[in-house]
Length: 231
Length: 192
Image 1: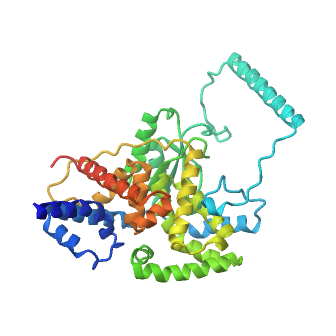
Image 2 (image 1 turned 90 degrees about the horizontal axis):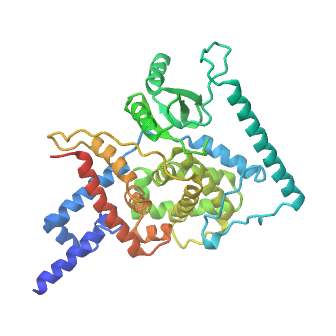
């Protein structure tokens, strides 16, 4: 009876401590009784082996390449000219490391009144433009020439993509046509491109289909949707 | 031995820490060469960690620079109460959470089509892909705990310090993360 309860206590402890045995933060020589239990208990041994596999998979190098040098140059510019660079949005250093931040200043009443007037004016101009656009008919045919303005993808969904370096121009064109996508920015740091989608891609279902098409292409190393509000 | 491996082994961790403490002292004295050395030492580690935390490439780079902006400003405040890596990861974690609060909801979750498992045991490559999908479906705290433990090799106490929570909370998060991962990986692998 006593032996069974000791075994049960060891089993419970093993269930909690297996991750720390697996990652080496509990030294190999520590707690021999626990290790003996794991070696003898089929359930614990299976869990231990599985966690070893998970850890190995998580430590595997992914295809992403981060451009550390160019990112550092941005930080250096911020360090050298802190007034030009943006401040962190809020403290992340913990309670003992509060960065010095400027107190929020309220604008004088006159400035606030002017700002409100500008907003009202902008709204009125927007309504007027919409009414003019509606009355002039928006059913003009889409005929594109070299001098036509490109369609705007400002408001649509965007995706950051990293292509394989071996991808040819022809391959890229085929890939973009297949996904209904257009390059709207890039290459940025790490050769990342920003793609916009030809309409209709507003619904998440359509976007998901197009993302799946991109990701299924072996020439695409990485494709991630860009959040609303992030340009 | 990779940097992550050095960080995971206690002896390697200690020697790294002495070097990194020395860099922090130089950074506190406004030595930009030391800043660059520490930045390049941590960039890949932080990038991976923040990609896992935010699941967004664009945010990860921004948070790394915000983190090192804090390091630049507060290197002199580091008292050695923890390893340098624990301190930096803690800053990155808190900055990541704050950035996520401003950034809004996560991106569209793309369903990954999976084929039934082959007769032979699943290859490591397949496990890597499924694991990536499964980790995205874990709650943020569980995903972070398992990333800190398995990818970066931090101890339970260090993770508690980084995530600013009790040690038992870390153990509970890891326990639930492992159980959910097991269920998700079984589902993704398909029927036997």
